[in-house]
Figure (tube, one colour):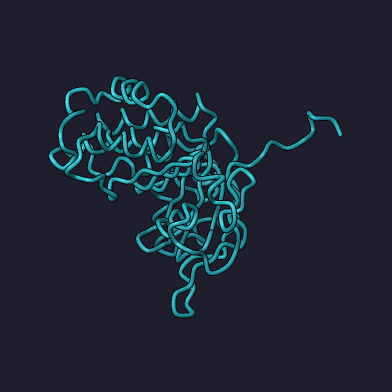
Length: 254
């Protein structure tokens, strides 16, 4: 077999992934994979299992069943080989408030063993417009400033797999657009796979070439935004989302 016919390694591969509490399944079984350089949306209503799924991929929640591989490394046995190539951002997970933004970036940079850390912090400060509050305690930042600091943390190690949970929640439209552009650039320039959980359908349509639709922990559809909109006979991804969330999907798609 020639090298040209060998499939490129998957950034993420999830097989039969399941999480149950007290014998009741809340997620799964899920099967999907992400290729490097792709942006995939993970959509579903509150309680659909998005955050639990991301938590299992990160290794923060132990799956009940199934397997997770990141660049071929089994997260149950070789997590240490994969974590350095991953990162995560959510406005619902605060950086330590008493540390300045610079101090937070130093701490996480050391944890990720980032080479030439001070130069990396300075570069991110310029790219993400952190200069005005780089030495301010994180707890005294506005919502938009906290998000920019958290994005900087998530890009410190130049991740090849980036997990995002509502990255632009509570941001004004201008700041949110700026954040989306920066994430899009990172994916393209670093061949990074991004898994994006979001309730902002316009954001998903803009960033994602593929969407995974969850309902009650189950994967109910998987396709591009354009094909999903056509399949359900709708004019926007938000209408598709509402159909699935309200149980109208089968009628709409028929």
